[in-house]
Image 1: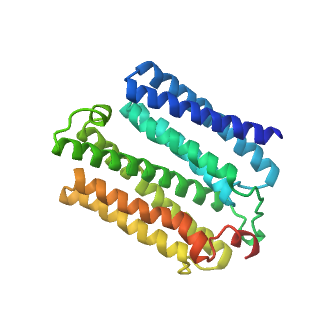
Image 2: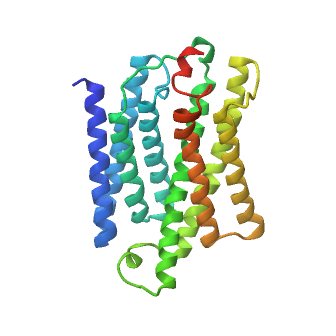
Length: 278
């Protein structure tokens, strides 16, 4: 096993250990387990960054041009963003969502074909890593918003049914979950916006046009409008709570289709294969 594969496997194992620690912290209300989980995730994100550095030197470019690389990068962005948000909220239950999701993304990455997709020379630009970073960090923020939205709906249902035991006692209050949802939306929306803008400039340098109505561009714009409507509703109409949680879940479903469905079903200029052959 090469150095890069070994580091990748260790990183995946670290995310699994952190997942267990955060689940123990949530179920057993063990603050010590939460603190250890936080430091474990921090070690994982540093080691993960080392993996990307080695991959970058091996392939000679930004290592986010295949499904395997994209899933791993998504996991890294998710963990990094969670650790930053955790500085404010200190909610171990969010770690019990973020760490297992990162672990599953790493497993999916490991099971994906290990192919090196070299960018077509016309696509090589400093705008590519900028576009990718903004887009994936925005996706990570929306994933956390989705997680908090699901938890909000579960907690809200428990309250309405007056079942104050079990999972009700494990989740944060509705107010905290709503604040997490809004914070993630406030972070994710500008990042997505910058991702779309930088992608448009990148497209112009490569193809001489800012917009081509490619399937992924169309779905990304549609998803952007959904999150824009949600943010507008929260800021001007006073949307919050259950309505905001449901809307964030629906919008994330569109985001997932933009990320996976377009590549697998619709094709276009943004498929992983197209990076090499265009």
